[in-house]
Structures are given as C-alpha cells and as structure tokens.
Amino acid sequence: MNATNDSRPTLLVVHHSPTPLLRAVRDAALDGARHPEIEGVNVRVVEALDATAADVLAADAYLLGTSANFGYISGALKHFFDSTFAEYNAAAEAGDVPKGRPVSWWIRGGYDVTGAAKAIRSLTTGFGWEIAAEPVEFVGEPDDATNEKLLELGGTMAALLMDPTTDPTMAQTMDQTMEDPR
Ligand SMILES: Cc1cc2nc3c(=O)[nH]c(=O)nc-3n(C[C@H](O)[C@H](O)[C@H](O)COP(=O)(O)O)c2cc1C
Image (cartoon, rainbow, N blue to C red):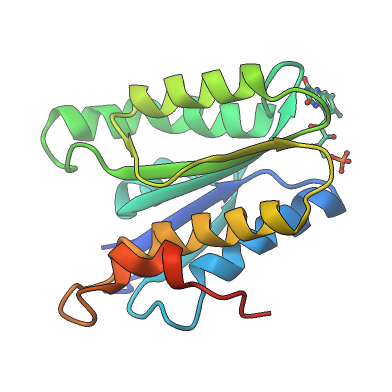
C-alpha cells in the first residue's frame, strides 16, 4: 500500500539535503536502495518539508537523512516528525499500522553528530519504529568506506521489503554481497 497506488511495498526516503555534499550522501544511499538486484520494492523519495502523514502511513519502512544542525537534526526533518506524528500515532493506537516498522538513517555533520543521533533515536522510538539497519552517522568528507556504508544502508532497507518468494536469501545477504552499481 502506498500513496501512488503502487502495489509494491514502499520504502519511504525522507531527507533534507540542501547542499551538494548532502545530495551526494543522499544519492549514495539511493544507489543502494535502487540496486538492480532489488526487485519489487517502491522507493519513494520525498524532501522532509514536503512529506505528509499520508506518505508515512502508506509506507512500509523508512530511511531518513539529515545534516546535524545546532546540535540536533535539521529543522526540516524535525518538522517532518512534528507534522506527521499525531496522525500516525492515532492510526498506530487504532491498530491500523503494524508495530515496529523498520527504520534507519544517515546523519552528516561538520564536526559533531552526537545530539542529532540521540534525537533521531528518540523520535523514531516515539513513532514505534525499530532500527533495521546500521545507521550511518559521520562527520567530514564522505570517503569510500562511508559511501559503501551508505550504499549498504539503502540496499539493506529496500531489501527488507522484497518478497521472500522472489529470492529468499536476498534480504539476509544484501549487506554482504552488494557491489556499487555506479
Ligand atoms: C546553521 C547550521 C548549524 C550547524 N550545526 C552543526 C552541528 O551542530 N554539528 C555539526 O556537526 N555540523 C553542523 N553544521 C554543519 C552541517 O552539518 C553541514 O553544513 C552539513 O552537513 C552539510 O555540509 P556542507 O555545508 O559542507 O555541504 C551546521 C550547519 C549549519 C548551516
């Protein structure tokens, strides 16, 4: 179920990427989520200021991306959480969404992501989501190792939603076998 009438399970990518560096970080994660070996998954990418509660309710898993700003997540991603929580929480309390939907994220800071990392853990726990892939939290220039982690992050989150009857080993082995498609 998702907001675009696509019958495939949906990975909702909600990000705030206002600089070239942040867009490159986002694109590395998206390369993983859109890896050609991952089939049958809808990867829906929405800027944090545009994401709605309907987007969140219609998705099956979440990949979030932000810079560290003023010792916290970006205001844009905080707005996403603020503006969708009431509707999502009401649906969750009514039993209309499964508990423990998978989530993970990337956070890039200039010098310290501690506060942002703590905040996003707390916020995603508040939504009742469960971390399903190792978050990528880093400072400085993204090197090859960081780009590989971002690729694995996106790939793992999308592979979680693959139909196991398509390839029963895919979700488990994705993080070990993925090669950079670029
Ligand atoms: C208003 C503002 C506040 C920031 N606060 C932090 C911060 O608390 N911690 C940190 O590591 N980086 C901080 N940064 C740096 C951003 O994380 C950085 O700009 C972002 O990751 C994008 O990198 P770029 O500006 O090199 O493209 C801040 C940047 C801005 C514009």
